[in-house]
Length: 265
Image (cartoon, rainbow, N blue to C red; front, side, top):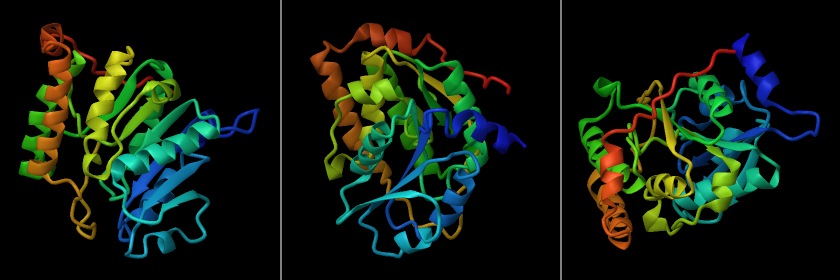
């Protein structure tokens, strides 16, 4: 019943365009991508999958599914995949862009509450927060995320609950305004940098707790806690340096709470 209500609210409108479009970046996700997409299609009329040069049959797993498929001839990184899908969503007239990973980590059943929060707070970057459920998160990834949270909170001037979650709703106008790095080795920097860029354009973050699972059949994570957190930290430190270390941001990061509760339908 809820999925039918959400599709009615967020699906095709009078003008034939979806208000919110889902983007899923995929790189070697053959074990999980079909199930992820099937779950997402319960709530979305338009799902864009960006295949980032997969060589494991990921594209074949999408056979006969009503998705918009965009393909990179080679692996360009998560940042380029997200940006490709976002630009495609904007070209279709999306009011907002939802992103989720293709590895089965994000539960499509959490999509309705993210969408409702986005509707209630159109000036926020809504992020699904996973860190409340520490027991299911690999220790190295949990610690790396907490470390990144501190720096990104300082640079963006707000509290940050989960800076590395890719389960998000971006206002379309935010994507039009942002300028971020898209190089392959900066693939996992993108989702951190865009939080800082969003704050610069007065789009603060709002966090909602979401479920997290790590399917046993999923491929190993592309995220490398030491290497990728080092890249994220370098990006943040540079942004702090060019702003004179932004001490007001440090103070606000310790005192502003942006946690939201979803509006009920």
